[in-house]
Image 1 (tube, rainbow, N blue to C red):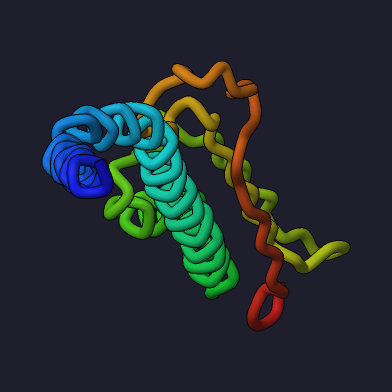
Image 2: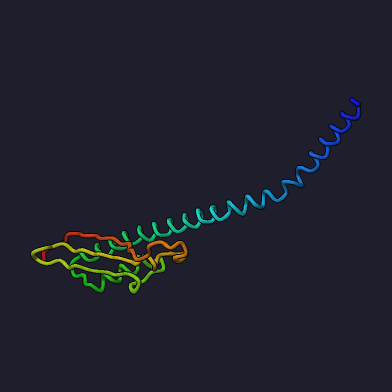
Length: 150
């Protein structure tokens, strides 16, 4: 009886060992099906954040560049707009996508101010499939003192 018990024990053990990979074959697929949407959401969120951050920095630089042109003697509003368009060109945006407000310098206030705003929907890469609040804007402001005598 002891021998038959040992045989049965080793037979059951052998069956369990050989059956284990077959029993867990679908576990990896189920785990991937559960984890993959979370990983994709994290990846797309990171891409979206990086792109919005890049556009924000480009808008800040474009406002500074446009303001720098505006403080030079003899500059016009057209010169300021042209420099702004050149500076935001790498983002794929144009003057139609952005709201550009230029406050010219006066003898009482010798400061040139350039304000720029872009609706978030123009910067959003993946649309509003998450239901986020997209009626926001991103933008920047730059002010510099006019060079020379007014």
